[in-house]
Amino acid sequence: MASTTGASLKFTSLSSSFKQTQVPLRGVSNVNSVSFPSLRMRPGSLRFRVSCAAKPETVNKVCEIVRKQLALPDDSSVTGESKFSTLGADSLDTVEIVMGLEEEFGISVEEESAQSISTVQDAADLIEKLMDKNCA
Image (tube, rainbow, N blue to C red; front, side, top):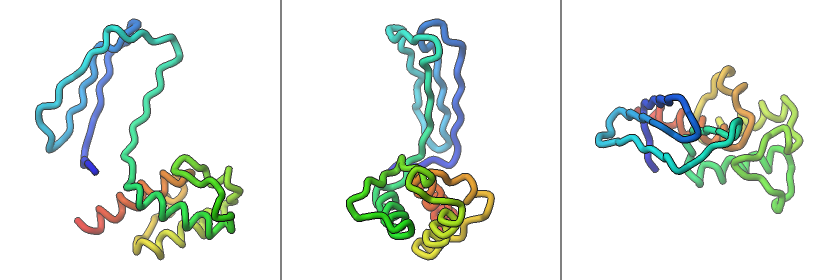
């Protein structure tokens, strides 16, 4: 798994093609910009998502904890994209899930961070961030 401690992105205007993308990463050299003049974008179809995905083991462990906390059957579909609210969790369930994660991973989640968790992936990413912070 690759990790980075700082990143920034710069986009220039789009006129039916990607013109320039700069991604300077601290600690990484020789990063070049890439142009895709042959790609045509329809207006309103541009979506951009940056994800620092957690390890699959962490996501799987979070899925297990969520299943257990919400008393979901073992065969229920819980993935990184699963939203707690879609799985039937209310605010109390979410607090209990966070408490279970804190206990399982030996971390402490601040209230502000806990409020930003809405998916299993959000929880797994936060766990790894806190675990990396604790190891540093």
